[in-house]
Length: 367
Image 1 (cartoon, rainbow, N blue to C red):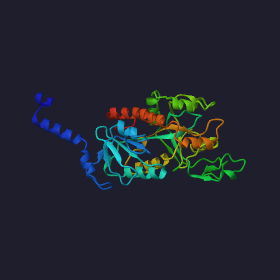
Image 2 (cartoon, one colour; image 1 turned 60 degrees about the vertical axis):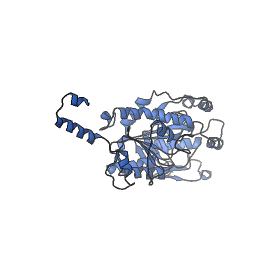
Image 3 (cartoon, rainbow, N blue to C red; image 1 turned 120 degrees about the horizontal axis):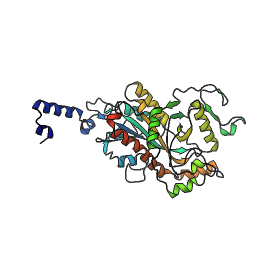
Image 4 (tube, rainbow, N blue to C red; image 1 turned 30 degrees about the horizontal axis):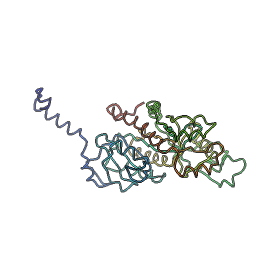
């Protein structure tokens, strides 16, 4: 017998209690699955956390993992939701209300998939937090492979002028300069619209403070790789958590000169506030879509977090050419598995805190 009956609550109170419980209960997944993608849905799924990954290797479970697999397996994301308007079907856990997506590689796919999800009536994303969790190249001047960086800024490295490296004037630092500049030595203030995306600084600081002491596993493979980076003390440290910004570009670049360009480009684009740490391909597409969705009242941009972990260094060690090191990395990223574990361990600390104390964070982001 329920306790409130044993306590002698009147029938009217019992009915109200049942009604309140029914109204608070999330809609059954089966009702949402009956809704057609992009069509009106009377029973949208409540979502508290969206995990945004960019790629998977092979199957979604049971083989060598990509960015998605550890989240799917360890967070029991077992409910498959058709998503024909995107790259990959969605997965959901009705108990935790975590929804995970795989956008596909590149800004075009990430932007399209994020926009498609944000406009899908099958999901209530009004209070959802978003964690973009992906691997990246990492600057050995700042961190080691396996390290995880919370971004304050994501900078678009594709909106640029470029000339072939063989035709660069001697006084140019590289063959690239921002699209809004008249030349590589133009010091006019940057145009940031559509090029620079600033994350909620209080949320970034909160996430870092929460995770800065997370123990990231080390292993002999990445120890051997970082030992090659003599003269770069941060590159030789065991994996750690830091705050560091991201340059998002469709070209997989590599080398000391381009690493210098990435640092200069990030500093210029953020008026000196940003520090390049990770290189990736998708965030400016994802964040552009989120910006528009926020304007439309579909999501809250101040609840978006970007976490990238280093699967490889963005430049070679001293004594190795950029070409040789790039070909070596193309055979398999030296920090691939370490970076995936890092993403999950660090990201999960934030996910657990938000979901465990949802009564505290549902209405406003932590500070």
